Image (tube, rainbow over all chains, first blue to last red; front, side, top):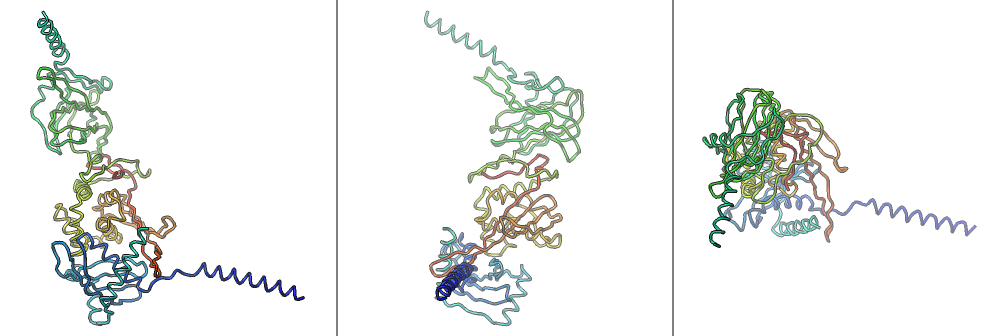
Length: 150
Length: 347
């Protein structure tokens, strides 16, 4: 009788281990919380790097809705001919992780973006990232780039 | 005695050169009596003037039973295409004039054709088309006759062969096979071809477009490209024409701006189809197992855009990164200024 119970315990333990193994396989990979910021900045760096080294002084997140995030970037080239300060919007699609870049000074070329931007500005609800946070994002951008190359 | 022998030998050699080399046609006479082109030395000499030398030359003429000969000097070296348009069934040949020490000259046939070109513009058929590599400022003679006893007018066209163009930055456009069997007649405008090759062959243009993209966005990049190349492409009217038009236009500029995911040949094909604002339909499909949107323009431009997520692990967690696969193609062979222009690749 005891032997039968012992067999059952072994089988249950075995099945439990299999279940744990399957659950382990299904477990989604750990995705960092700054995924959206890093993706949008990776896009920004890629689109601007032909002009030289860049320095970001302000980076703000405006949540438009669950599908779209507007990032405000105040930046400049530190090398090259034109080192004036520039302001851009990165419009980030959270479902596809795709971004598009819009210069704030020519936003009237893009009426639909301008309309949303005006609304967001009126609400004045945004998260301002600190210099340290921006620096960390850029470090992670570098890591992601290295990961993409490998 | 020895001097006399040398003088005699030289005289014999001179005689041989003069006798053999005095204005002979070295390799003429392709085809039957209906198609043979074998001008005499006098006919070539009579055709010496005028000299045509435009990079894109158009000559209107007619055939009344005597082979017409046109003297052409290419302003730059490279492949050139010679062909006629019109309803006259033409046969053509290109001869190169060669000479030796001023007293010996001859004409080498470097190209001959009967029926390679069908003129879809005027419903003409059976025109000749010759593609030949020319040297700069050398003397070439283009001979045109009608097939058999056919007479009538024709237009001779001479133009650089853009299918075989090379880039200073490296690379050559090479023909490949027709994409599929759907038989569509498609036409490139001169602007499209210029835009394509100027963009591909000039890194400076790409950088200017990138700069303007940063300064003014995609509209600014487009405006700058227009002003540089004297074009009139417009981003704004496209959505009013077709729903997929804007997506196609944006694909082109993104391909130029972010050239890491589009090859030169892909950009070339996309630019070639850029002016096409005809009906566009979209289809949702799968490419390599990933959901993709395929835009199909009425003249055969196809843009496939598939997006999937790539997980990239770092030492502190990982990131999802969007991977975009864009591919551009055409349904079938296209027509460049009346010349068959097949899908190719930049190598």
